[in-house]
Length: 213
Ligand SMILES: [Fe+2]
Image: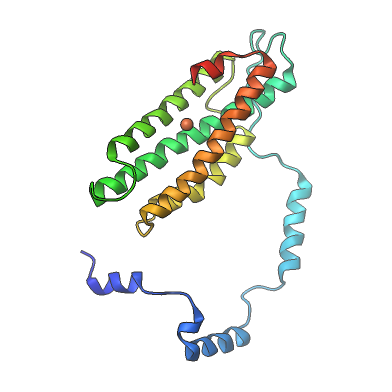
């Protein structure tokens, strides 16, 4: 059971130095006299990062297509690799999208029907669509001879990028407006992602993708 005092402490203003000039002065003095816990500064951080960048390790895995005759036969291999990478990205994004709407549904069910914003039915509907998109991409990768369980480079990056959106949706302190703003970021990215995917499919002669969406 959470106490009212604890709730007040959690919801109180925690930033903004100008609300307490005396404590602000004390804070500045404290930070000026404190000794850093480790040596070096931003230059050292950049140097360390530079060493890792120079190693040139790729992110994710490119091993999406089995070495079979069917997979990519007669296709531009490089083009197919890009297409599968972007398909894997959409797969990761639609998976995350499904979870985002589950989180929004959870919030709206908790707050009740009077909460401004989409209705529970609308959220469930969009969530189901996200799942259908996920299954469509999953099937498409399999039909092309790829492996939908592979986390491709673009899928890896998409997953990491969308983590912030999930954090907003699952943070109990987020307002409905803030959740919808975060979802807008996801939806705009998703729209552009599909547009690019359809363009890539056209280039490779896979015109079935667009009609299935
Ligand atoms: Fe979607």
